[in-house]
Length: 396
Image (cartoon, rainbow, N blue to C red):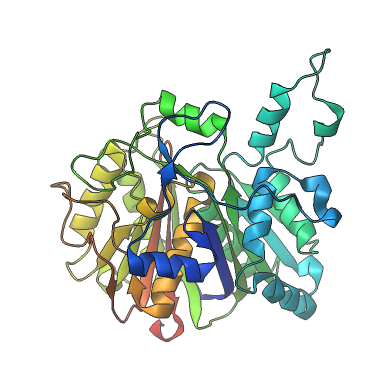
């Protein structure tokens, strides 16, 4: 079993999704129980579903960054401008030096949407048009390289691509890097934008709902894809908000389905609690993975019911944002951090009749409480799992 770790301070955080830009929009959506899903009109042949689409991504990047221009990097840029995040990173850069600030970002598709666009307009020789041949864009590492350039950093730069757990695992990588002295601060998070590959890919697996998704509802019939970006700045030492534990695992059970008994998810949970030095009874709030797919919700509901007491308030926020794939982990971590900061815990939007597997922990309505410890679950496609544990500074 892992040993407890020292807390890691979260100096700044932000997220942008279908509910709006920045944390104020997220908090307002939770308070009003207002989701951002809409009927899909994305792409040349829109799939009949609902999506969590972000507005304002038609504006190109600033001229100084135009070599990185694509939808995914525009989304990341929009998120970076919110909540004073760029200023917080600039302050850290001045304190420790640009080479001591790491960039660790999660994404599942990066800028593949730009590659899809290029394939649609091949020239007579079957090649990308000259204007679309950017090697900076057509790579899974485009996002991390872009963010490092935009923030004027030159420390370690890593991309994590483990499906839906990608940007949650970025926190774990950063904590280890800070603990080992390889960096003094780390920008973590991720971005994934809508594209045909994910929309039609998940539809081919019969996982996409034609209606707004209903996490943990007994009549749920699939996921809604969304796009989002979010970031957090981590630094060594305690603070008002802090990462106190993380757990990672891989089911190795099936290419697309979780272990039916949730063994991988439970191992990630156990390791997160052990590193935090707490047991499940101390957890006030859980942001659940809760995709509205049949198997994920069944397995996760059973895990929560057997491990947590009735006082723990658990909810899925996929009904607000859709499933943002590689950026789901950071967006849901931000929801958990907001619960710690404000006491406002989301409800599970669109769930009218909870699945019988749900225990009293899974709540339909938002609530306020003295939230001191919160978890965020990210259980990715094929069984790649991550659980993050956060606390207010006085919790340890």
